[in-house]
Length: 273
Figure 1 (tube, rainbow, N blue to C red):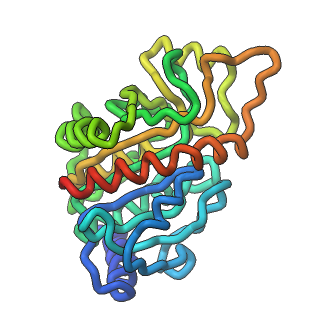
Figure 2: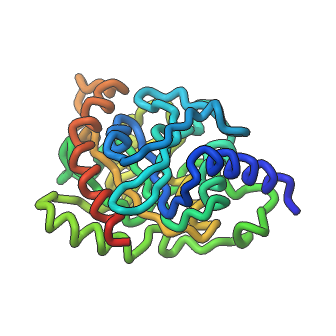
């Protein structure tokens, strides 16, 4: 047996011992999007530093709590903040929580992030459902495969679950929430992109760009977990001028403004799973 499975099991058993609930759905909340955690019912809050083998989140707007409770009538486990490659963590450390979720029996993963809008039709505060991605980060599956969790060469043809995307479209219409659709480009960060990079990402099919999410999606699919992804457009990368300055705090402000819409949509998607 792979020795990494022992660590996943120890983390999972500790979490389950604190809540006595079996989560069906995992949620990873990105920069400024931790407010969804405020509407989780009967929450059990576990700081990351209490969980065996977990790392701590250092990024702006990431509180570093694992929350288990009820949302949309289902038991969910939510990460109030994620780990990033740019924080100095390995890809295995970045995606460790997803492995633990899989060990706990999670079947669906919902990921969110704040991203720069490359598509000229996107505006700050828009919600973009991720339909596909371009990965410019090291692949988290490099190295010895964990055979007990998934295949050596997992298929990424449908990385984002068609069923969950259809539910999202239907529920967004009911809620009168306008959602865009597009391709998310994942880079390492921590620098914001140059104007030339923004143009290049658009040329290769990108609609939004960020510094997270894709490693977690790859590992979730390796584990057989269905994935839904959503970006909050926090700045308009297509309007870069000589006086434009990208700022991490501005990203948080923009994400916070859109958090209510995303919370409503995520809740309704969960109700229909």
